[in-house]
Image: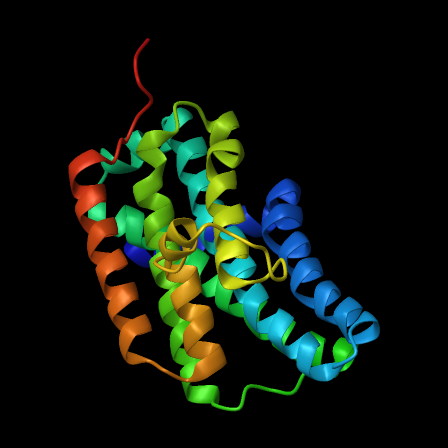
Length: 239
């Protein structure tokens, strides 16, 4: 089995799992398209308000479709000893993880693209003013959040708890990027949420500033790689 085969396997398993499809595709698409459509009708600034909400909702797409999907997939395969069996074959550790991470990142990009088009028709949100920045940070954000999802799995004792353990990340991403509207927060908490990679992606898309968001994503990618090398578990803990 090659890296390409693990990529195809991860993609196939994703699209065959109805629960994963609902949580990883339908839910984030509903949030990213439904909330701007609602804001278009209830806010006085109409399209401008809907556009701001959609840009912020990219954080939801990254937190759910990239981060959460990798967390659920890898913890499930770890507990089912799938990862251990793959590791016993010809694949390297990097190839096994890269297949899952790149597959999830690709699916996240597809979801972002679908939402970008759908929200244009549902809420009148214009296409990105700077498509190059939008595309670059969508790609980078998808890859980094999927990588961090893999790095997060050692914290989860059992696969059935994966979604619960990942919930704070989902909530933090939404609040930090403003996807839930203006929420008064203590200054220290806002400063912490501003450091999240999802916030960096949203800031780049909203404002076009790329230097600090790019540095943020690079640091988080390095943290993810180091965490995987030090703590990633290929089989469940023995009780």
